Image (cartoon, protein in one colour):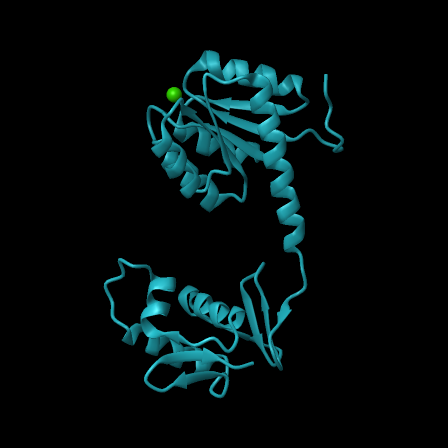
Length: 232
Ligand code: CA
């Protein structure tokens, strides 16, 4: 029996409606030193995620009540936990769809228990590494402007700047690409997406608000006839 080094056993929630498969997963993962709880539907899985507070979820893609992709989305929105999905063999769309919805990795059925356990360990390790890396000091951008990406917190001269999510994304994008000139179309595509129905005036409005709120009048510069750039 393999026991993890941590003081406490890592908790795994298995969401799988086929009970024999859920039982096999529980047996296999417990043997590997994990604490396992099973839920046999999407709804009860989401409930269990709240009460059991798992470190990770193994999620079957075909559930009777809620589609796996939606469970996945809700789990990643409500809890900051990694997800390993179980998909039918050869269903490429499912895998891509799942990874887009926030799943961290997948295993195809029928699976080898040792493979599932190995994937669980890898994903957990990767996730914990990323999480510990998050606790960094706020990044300083020029004089008096700091951004803590972990907290999505922007400060200007020690004062918190309240930004909408889009204003925040736009600011971060400028800060990460200093002196680079962006057209309004490029910014619209990059931050609002290709299928956004608005026009490039949206960009102008957001830049104006950013300048005012974060006191960046002389830093977020208009490049006449082209677009905008950030000058640190
Ligand atoms: Ca199923």
